[in-house]
Image 1 (cartoon, one colour):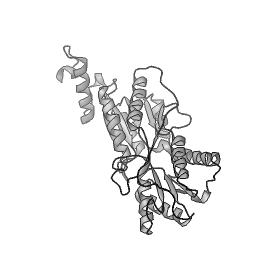
Image 2 (spheres, rainbow, N blue to C red):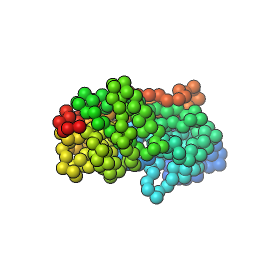
Image 3 (cartoon, one colour):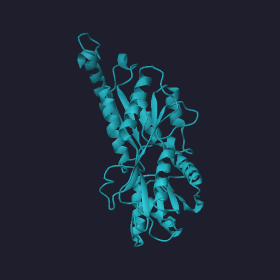
Image 4 (cartoon, rainbow, N blue to C red):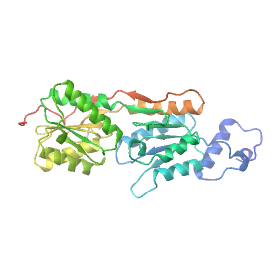
Length: 319
């Protein structure tokens, strides 16, 4: 270590970078002569850990970063915890090489985006997952929301459902906006209509999904397309609290195909995000920026896959 800190010869570049990374991870201040160099650290920002999809993204991205000799610094938002903006200040103090956002305020149109603009001004390489910000040229890797909703809608329609509902995220949540637009499009293409009263919004939690689904059941929904798997599990709980059976009385489609969805009762029909491909693509886009090569600007779309399990079935109850 002393050879690295005193810039003495006889140390390989790999060893040198390992020592500097260890200093950064442990929070030690670099010697003055080494402060101009960026750390081999990459911020990995997650909006939560309760939804299994985000730990899954973290595992893929963290592994891909490690293969490139980079160390992820996990920044997870919790209620009344460190804010996303404060995390950015901490990461900048650690001189991170870049930041990958697997979720966050960038997906909310009405949220404060000032800390993203500061990253752009500092020329910090950034990659977004599943949303982007107009006016910022950060590359983005997304699952195609339009294809996801079309797959789910056509599946429910093929089972005889006409009162198909959407259970989405908050009003300013950009992926939810895209899902709503896609649902209206596929309904029109199939000669159906999406009743505005069959669109509900909620925070991304099981409890929120249960409350929103209960309102949809009051309005006669027989099939519900959800914007996340936890929302879908909440919808199933709402049906059971009313003495209804899934899928005999209500069909439910989730989104993500996160861990353990095969273990629910019934096993959840859901639209699978290609997490492995998306996570690796995000790291490739980050590396392209770090290496100074021209990177893909805009959004790189990945096609989802409908996974049919036990929570959807032929409509048997009257519409």
